[in-house]
Image (cartoon, rainbow, N blue to C red):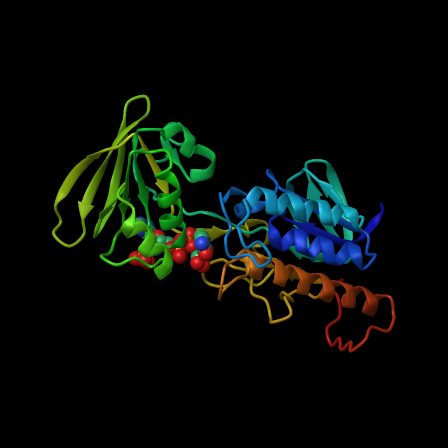
Length: 321
Ligand code: NAP
């Protein structure tokens, strides 16, 4: 079986930046996209803080351009999902629906998935009024009323976005103060279509065929109420996509991959980049930066394996197996 120099799992900005750097270093590079291209960033309507785009850029467009750039340098990009990995033997094995693949170095950029509310009705109405993606589904709520749950950057950004369509957006937050950046808070508070519902949690998503409303509980007073809405967008944080690596890599108490400053995981030759390991700042710019670091470290690792000089190389750890 052909052995790739680098396999990258994930096609968000971290994975794509890693592919650009690895392929440009003439490493034989294969990237698995997962079930959609671009990760969470591609679902963001407008990214206005990625350097170089003073007018902002759609997340889907930015990640599409990153993909073109990676391809230009020779990276192979496969629309396939990885179902298993074996990190106990080197070369590492990566299993996707299309078969098994081997690599000398692995870069994990599997990102995060939206956290669910875990209340009755949520699961039942996914796709029928419960959504985790305003960019994907906001359009269906033209002149209707929706609720956004959460108080972080995502909830506030997406609530503002939804006011393009919905006539009313309730922003339901469990505290009386937002976690979101001040610039977003100001914009939301100035937006007449947004109404804040403070100190409240959703206890049930209610409906027959589709969402008709939410049962809410005020966490301060204990008072229960019903809010009539046509749709609900859940933005209460994320959970890392690390199930594949449980028992093979060191994860922290929340399930994120533990890395050092150079993106090395607990297994030599395996690197992680982007939100799946992020502890300080989950942004496109940091995802891309950590992807680049991971690719350069992978290149050093391969040079070490092959007994080649690498400028400034110091490699104390041996690969497994
Ligand atoms: P987040 O910052 O973790 O915020 C999650 C929000 O959901 C918090 O307000 C939290 O409440 C609330 N929450 C958590 N669990 C809950 C539950 N079970 N029920 C009700 N509410 C719950 O997540 P995020 O907003 O998705 O942001 C994730 C990262 O991406 C952040 O680093 C953020 O800066 C970044 N991001 C940045 C931008 C941007 O720069 N424009 C846009 C999107 C995301 P508490 O506040 O009470 O904890």
